[in-house]
Image (cartoon, rainbow, N blue to C red; front, side, top):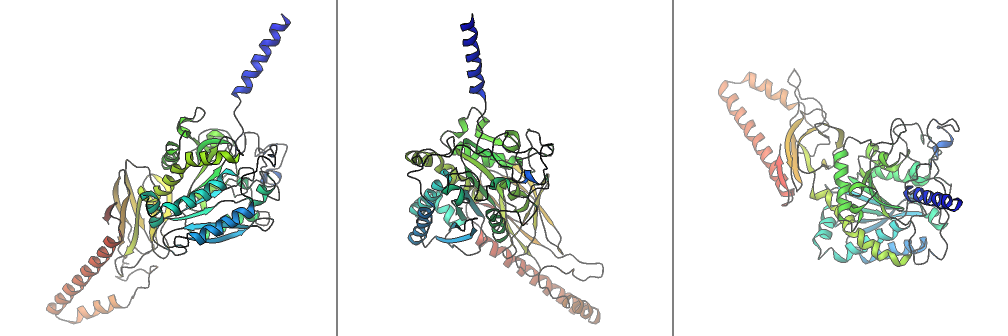
Length: 489
């Protein structure tokens, strides 16, 4: 009888252990101090939101992975070998002073173009090194194939791809999750729900570097590579009441599309038993606060995914080629989605035909996309297979709206905005350098001449306006890609 009870207890304990979910790279369910807990002040201690430190991998297990010095050399060698389509730059330094190196890949690296930008970031957690290895492999694959592979060529010619293999070189060097100050970098960003990480003096240099990076470059989308699970995670990462449930952001359907694109292109991510279709809403998985993903979407205008690309955080180096092959197509397709789908275009002023910085909104989605200050190009990612009402606006101009059917391919929608007129007939001052004396002089001239001359001048002015608009439309046609369906509003 005693033996039978012992066996039953053993079987019950084994079953419980089998079904307990794994604590993964974002930080497990119990890896942070809950906001509002009586045991801690959320505005103080909980700011760091430390994850439980796992046992560090042995030195033997790390063999075959690039050291920080190896990675730096490999990145420098890459930009020498592929100098025509790449450049190397740093966005800052880690706590211990190691440069945060970035490779940019484009047919015009370092130049500002009317094209979308994408960034990949790896090694946010020091004990998750697979991402840094895969990102360098991605760069080399594009370099070796962009002249012969259509997808690689599409990316090089139409996207500015920025690759930061290691955000946390200090943590990697000691095989630890957090940075040199023992802070989890994926809990160090300002949070939308709770007042944490607001003190600039306490923010980590790696975090500051990312935030400054997004102020300098307008990224359309991005992804961070983590380890410890196999799933594509999307916002929101937290909830207003700190509970675990599905909490979608305004672009929830678009994020589901992007996450599914990655998952279904992967060898086996979409077959996940734990996550339906291999994707998950962050808050539904488990809430975190101070994460990079939500901050990117809210403050950077950047659609970011958190990609868990390996069940094992630190697999043996011999497994890296297989993991790369499993993720290669997904990584490429995610970048290419910036030009293969969505609504893209530029905003122009009718009065001068110049690029006009403005805003683009989609009816029913509470999110605004900003057009570039210089080129006035915008890139609005949206879920395909739907009809959208898109509106472009700029101060001093009448907004314009068009209805777009977004099918399998991207749509180009260029907007030509007309200046607004005040009650007195003067043009309202806008962001362009317009001449405000001419309309008044013409009006006065019309009143002092006979009707015949007035009519002739009206016809001439109208004809010149027609030629100007035709010229603007002609320039737009030249800039469009033949693969896109294009409209001008």
